[in-house]
Amino acid sequence: MKPPIMADFLFFSSSDWAWPWGSRQQVARELARRGHRVLFGERLAGLEHVWKYPALRAARRLWPQTRVIQPHIWGWTPPVLPPGRYYAPIVARLNAVLVTQWLRPFLRELAFTKPILWLYQPEHAPLIGRFGETAVVYHCIDEFTVGTSGRKRAVIAQLEQTLLQRADVVFANSPPTYDAKRLFNPHTYRIPSGVDVAHFAQALRADFAVHPAIAALPAPRLGYIGNINERLDYALLTHLAQAYPQASLVLVGDTYPWTMDAPPLRRLQALANVHFLGKFPFTEMPAIVKGMDVCLLPYAVSEHAYFRSPLKLYEYLAAGKPVVATANPEVLELADWVYLADDGAGWATAVARALAEDTPTQQQARSAFAQNHSWSRRVDEMLHCLQLSAVSRQRSNQPPN
View (cartoon, rainbow, N blue to C red):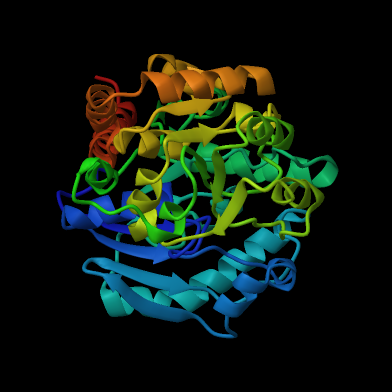
């Protein structure tokens, strides 16, 4: 099970490569930067998903698609799969058979004979053992039972328990996720979200231009980057926009799975100083963040928010920006670096403090702190944990003297 010095990694992601951008792509890029080969399998999409989401429908064909993403990284897009894997485990097993048959020719072409299997979703459990893998990693960056109930919740929990028990190593990003997963696998390690520090620290350079999409808006600009959906506290955002009528409240990102017709977004959009800019490529994010005077993490208090490891928090800090956030277990770990508030009035006060107290010295300090949370360091930890787990299992398999 011990990974070789230069290993091949077979990823099955919970997203496509292009979107949404986050931990999956960052880990793959960091492994590739070190010379490892990565085959990035994109999200397994059932018929129900492509029917519901036009963007996903446009990206899927009736046959597998392959491409070179960058040096050492190949992309593999599966065709549309049968629906219902989170209501019947037999569908997840059928999907695993189909995926294996579709993927094996490409694996042979690339000579991926003994990869490390890197999984992201409970439905990936039936893929274990099908690719001659030397190790199985479950990189748990979400809580998939959150927001579900009844049979669907039970099936997801069952699939995930199987994955946890069969994985050689589990990486859990948030404190409560780590506490939950280590009950099923002793080789569970806490690996929080990370940041491409050099990318976002560009925002600190005097010669680095603010993105024109945000530069045209009146300052101060209070900004959020990320998915714009049910996870945000819209009462809080409304209060903030009304408390600062002279400021621009800027939301950058996709409304997936919502549209702009969703009532919370319609109500917020009716305010003159609220601006929805849409989504931008990851390459343009530092220029967007540079135009923000205060960065926001306005998550609603919910089961989902409780388990979050907010990647955007580290990106904001790497750009040197003051951050106002609602609290969750991981945010509380960084309480010395953020302004915390839990209601509209508290947020208005926290924003006022953030604007008044921000200095170039503080900006540099925030970015320097973010260096401790770089993806390079995260992947160092992951590879070290993988080695430790290999040694532990080898020792446990040795016969007693």
